[in-house]
Every structure is written in structure tokens, then in C-alpha cells.
Image (cartoon, rainbow, N blue to C red; front, side):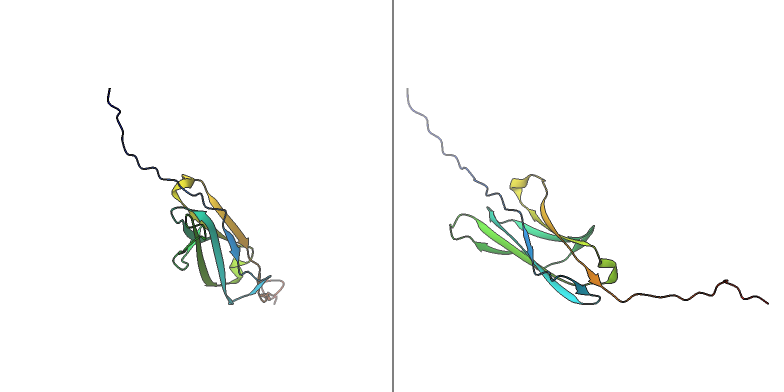
Length: 132
């Protein structure tokens, strides 16, 4: 009986590590522009990174791809630059990794930002209407 052989192609996926956010200072002043950086390594093929502030997508730089020293996996990085407002005080800036090995699972990290701003004062008469 003859021996049958067949060729097959096996693709091994490298699962990306949890992303790391860098570049945050302890607090930001209102109207200050800041840049945050995000990095994840170990993916194969190269993963994609996305940014969010709460439910709002932030448009960062396109994901940069660098081959790891092992020649088999990739490190990806991205930056986002934005101007903060008082409404951003306490907001979470989230960097997420998108990769086929995660099958829809969320792999992300967040950085809560603190914004310093001047107070707003309103003066109202008491009682609200002048007396005659």
C-alpha cells in the first residue's frame, strides 16, 4: 500500500502582551496639550492599537511596527496628542490592543487624568428679586 503525504501550512499566532501607557505627568493644566504613548509586544502578526477617552474614540498616530529581536514577533506602539479641558478631569484614557488571537477579548490598559482648572464663580442676589 503506498504512503500518502500531504502538505499543510500551520500559522502560529503570537498573543500580544497587555499594553503599557507612558508619558503622563501627575496633573495637567486646562488647555494644556499632552501626548501619551502606548506599547505592546509579542504579537504575531503585528497587532493594532486604538485609543479612547471614555466612549469617544481618539485619533492617534498610526500604529508603528517593529520586529522583536527574536525575529518571530512584533512590538507595536502608538501615540495620541490632545488638549485637555476641565471636562476631562477624572477621565480614563484607554489604549486597546486588537489582534486575531484575542478573538474579541478586550486587552487594554487605562490612565486616569487629572486636570487643574480655575474655579467658576456666579453671584446671585438673595432674594432673587429686589424688594420695593
